[in-house]
Image (cartoon, rainbow, N blue to C red; front, side, top):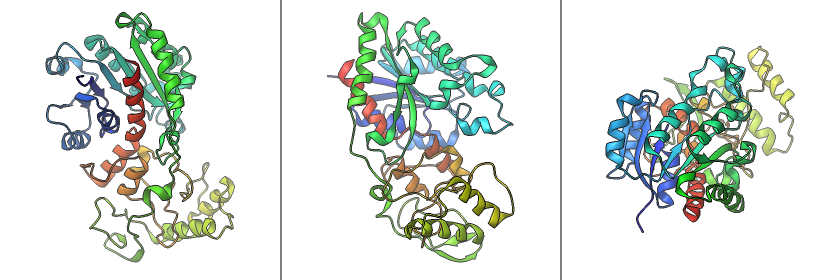
Length: 374
């Protein structure tokens, strides 16, 4: 049996693609706007995979090339538009007003590719925030559902039933995402049943929980050192991407204090108000939200966000002697990327692409489920 062929839109660094590849799919082409992300895709691409570095809203510049490469038969389209505009963090940022952010309408470009390729199925991935997003007063989920239906696809009746937590699928990270699966009505008279079957099987496909300890405990330790030339910690060049970002002395003291508080079982600084007080004590400033979070060895990580490229205050290493935020390699492992997956670009690029990615282990569960029903 030949492999099912899919196209990955808003491909990022390839987390969704990698999961589908491991499930036995053929990634025919990927489209991504950011150069460093495309370099990462190319470094991990299969021989015949086409990587298109384009703005997906400008279909006229790439659609003919895409259609020529994939041929007349394409089984699926997968992907998810950038999610920051739908996220809670995106809404808190007053400069990022929901109705002014073009990312709220990138699903239209996703639909335009569906219209051109007419795949048998699609997978649309996004953050839970999209369920309540209303740019220009438009209910995003109602509009998306209408557009998918108008294109001839069966989808779930209520997208609130399409939310999954990746930690239930072996990913060492709490990460809730909306997964919309659509099946082309003209391809099967039971398309609605196939959609229901997809969600039933996904709910049943649960894996043993994986913790932060399972994911990163074996990595070499990196300790604080006397700061010089913007280097605050010992280095570990023998292990790929396992070099920490620079931390000033104030942050090192805070990291050590918060991690030791948990290690000793005191838990004096685990509440939101206590963490706000720590921030005020060390910086002299007030904060409406708490800035810090220490990972727990015995639990999955909290969500890895794209914001990680700016700072790692909410992803503090649980070992107080290391007093630092997580490295790129640790972030990759918490996202379930294998150590041999090649990442290109600056340190900031790598943190950002990981925070935007779909965990490959979760993507494989989606792919495995689809293979059972198409």
